Length: 338
Image 1: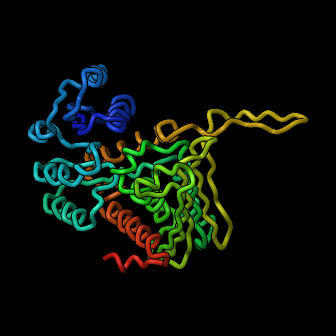
Image 2 (image 1 turned 90 degrees about the horizontal axis):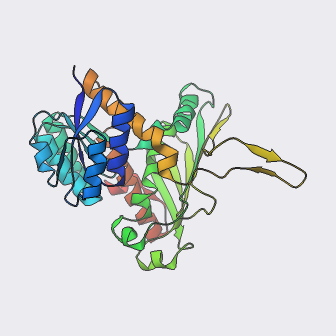
Image 3 (image 1 turned 45 degrees about the horizontal axis):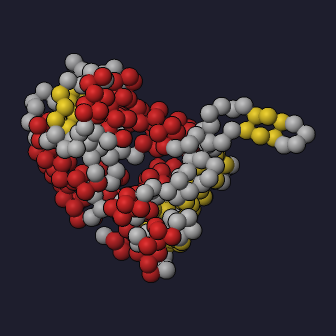
């Protein structure tokens, strides 16, 4: 089979990341076209330098090209569902960045369209493909920790995003912690059945004025009886803090932050080492390449994608339950959201 021809819809930061990943790390695929209504000359040059021959303003030009096998949807959240449905009807396999949509009903409508079209549909939960979290998952699957009792996840950004972004992001639970909700289920091997959320505005008052929080802790109950806790902050002054731990009947497995080097200086005054990598682009570049590589492999070999649409739905349902819990100051069962 020839190389899988991909079309990237959305030429922003994540679209560029995927274009570079495909070009330099995925030999079985190539980026054949890119589309973005706000494409600039600088962006065109960037993609042209990667060997992308066609750059459009209208994504429908990509959907109309029969030689394109699949699309990577990297556009703004409010366009994901619409473009997914149109791509499915055009017979394209689809990789879609999270979330599919912020409305549960719209997500279900999208999944129905994908199923009816019979195309592959993968959600961009890249943390499952990170080498550290993958190793942690393997420890759980191999029985190293025994029966899972507690899952702990820490995810803290180095600096908050612009307030303009906060206003359209869907809120901390849907924008930031949504990755951790997916990771919690992945690491525990079970579904979340109940959440209890606590949140505050401790970083930037402007975030609160925009209707969101910037600091949160959510406790989880899983179907297998395990419990979990996730903590998020929009600002960790020491860098991008990404850690996780799974504790069980036989022991505990944990992963720490990635750093520029493992160099550690010890002297009479202190023991010092480097701070974590600054942000997600540095931290998860390997994971971005791995997730798209698996997507391409699924197309090429006719197998199921590793992270399907159900995971995209589940994460938003949990996020909505967390929002409800925060508002009503009580535990919320996931069954209440269905």
